[in-house]
Amino acid sequence: MNRKLLAVFAACLLVLGMARTANAGPIVVDFSHADEYATTQTFSRIGDVTFSHDLYTLNDGFSLLNGGAYNYFGERREYITFNIPVALLSIDILDMSVAFPSLNPPGDVIFELYDSSYNLLSTVNVGVTGTYRTVAFNQNNVSSLLIDFTSRLPFYGDGRDHGWYSVDNLVYDEAASVPDSGSSLLLLGMGLAGLRAWRKRRQ
Image (cartoon, rainbow, N blue to C red; front, top):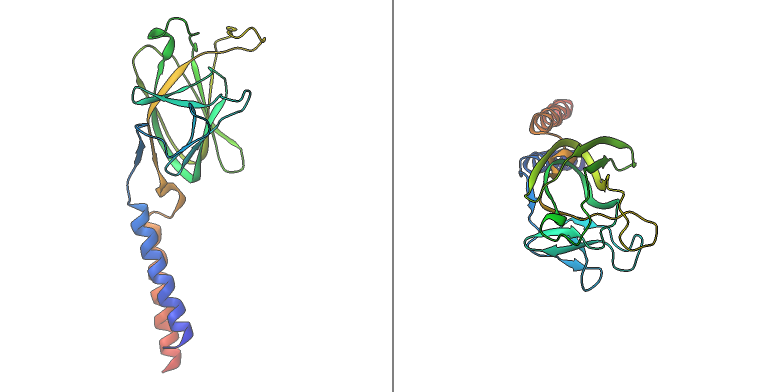
């Protein structure tokens, strides 16, 4: 088979594969386990999602607890990173100090959503309680999610502010990183049209 014909056929197969990927559906990180750990208490990866650690102290980061994950040392501006840009749909969050009164409450929680070039896409501020609430984002092309809070309470006596929260059910869709099915079909049609034109020239 002619090399040009093979190239067009391969491009058509690639487009069809992208269309299937676009329909794969949302992924839920339920924090039931971790795939890699940074320390004995904090984890660094679940599936294709990585989690900050050791930003300020040796053991800061996220730790699994009761089916969720909390900011282990109560640090501000911990973050979650996706290996490709995604449609970030939602996350559940609660105030850890309700169940553990010795910890500082976080106050309102601030979510900052960034793209792969570290441009701020959107900011979402929410109040939190002792029960999980779902925070909807519905934001495309997200590469990282940073979590901050408004509490300005010291805890370790080092002049910094600390508060504790827990997250669960991080929901995202990798379809944001590929063309939708309509775009894929358009590209496929263009490829087939090119193939027909090439064959006519050969006749």
